[in-house]
Image: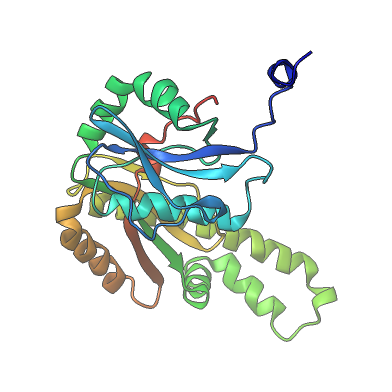
Length: 262
């Protein structure tokens, strides 16, 4: 058997790299020169017609899921959302190579992606968060609930071991009280944002003292109006709720696509 015949029969080298896909963008979007992706690889663009994918090369031997991986995924997408519509893919989308990205992802879903990008044109996601000031919300609940006030008086200056039942009862009243106030305050936030967006998503609380967490899809040109609406709420709730506005972000709550097979 000749040397060439041996090489033809030799097993293929195992694939050591793949292509991580962040999201779908219009084809005229350009990756920032210094943009760094997962695994510290440079971010590039794979195009097909009028649409494209934000990608970077990744080692298939490296497990994904570290906190910095999640932050990098979001950073690449959020940075793009400031200048162009972007359809985020779920974290962890890896395909074999750029040809697979073009053929199996972009070409296979071209019409769907193009239509979704058109819907997002000029808009981005913003998240409005409110968090109760602990002392203020506790005082509010105790003042409004007679039983809570009585329990506070019973507990005051008493040993913890002799007031365990009272403390548990007070804790339950406070927990229920915060939940009720969160529902009411979340409705207030939604009402304040409805004139700016017809796409609103109320998120589940991520902290026991969270007053509200609402995602909205808003025209980037109306960001000043959004900031004023949130500022008005912050002024209204000064000393009671600390308000934050995050964005512009990729539209995770509204158009996140499934991970491609690859």
